[in-house]
Image (cartoon, rainbow, N blue to C red):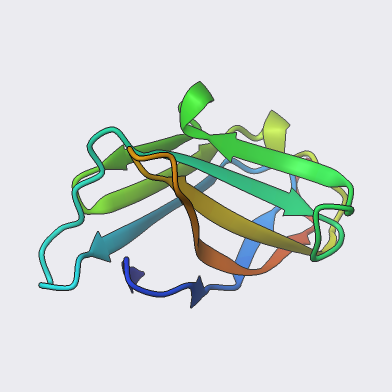
Length: 119
């Protein structure tokens, strides 16, 4: 998927319970060039409600390298153990923190976890 750094994008995600989750998102700036993520950080939460009051189920962050930011790409990677979440319909958002400390939500949407047949 490709997104622009200019506005919040809605992306509904489907993942399998107890499978490694991986998603790469291409990001361009207003000129169409790869977005420069130098010194940016990122945080993504998956919750059972579309608010901070929902139970936190999955966290991805640049702090633990489950999110990596390179020029033009946001790469999400969560281990199979980290995806041992009950099947269901959840919500997420992904926030980017800029070098000046400002925080912007770039992606949001539904996060569906489906049962895995093979366990």
